[in-house]
Length: 238
Ligand code: UDP
Image (cartoon, rainbow, N blue to C red; front, side, top):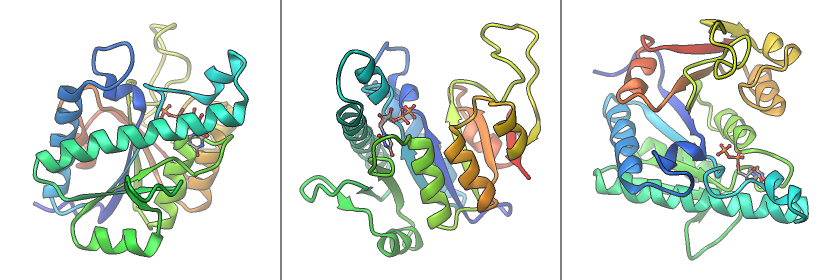
């Protein structure tokens, strides 16, 4: 049954969800489970773009804290997102989903370079396109890369699958009485500095009127629920 709400969506997964129960790296069995959820979404007729973070392997800022140049650390972080993209590509193809990885940093022997019109064609043919290496620039995050690609590809919404089931007024891990928002405006997220996505990503989505749906991907089957508008989530919109 096709989802009437959306034609094309971008799913952003933080790198940490690929770890499963591990402390770092990639848990192939967990990635396989995520791939099944993406397949189920695609089987409803949706066109799916994917962006995966790199925090499970490397964050530029953490490298900088230990003395590495920030730019060097950020490039290492971008390379980490390519590894995650390849892991997800592998899992999706095993699940029978056709995919292409396009990297913002060209690496011809590994994957395609990012070419918007080519990505468009892949999506039309029913392939899942995984956008790797963020924006290709240091000092950005994969959240901003996701917002950028969602705008470029004309996505109807950006789904951010993470470990938290939405946006709260304060950190739910520290404050048990924290309240989750059902909906919230871009402006409030920015003015209250709420930890949803970084400010550049939120501003880009606001400018292009792309709703951001924040939900927990840790709960099995949750992606299908939020896509259908039922699951626990927070929608950031105007
Ligand atoms: N990164 C970057 N430019 C980008 C995207 C990512 O420099 O456009 C680097 C940055 O160091 C970042 C790391 O790649 O910390 C991993 O991405 P991110 O932290 O967004 O991953 P996530 O938190 O989603 O796992």
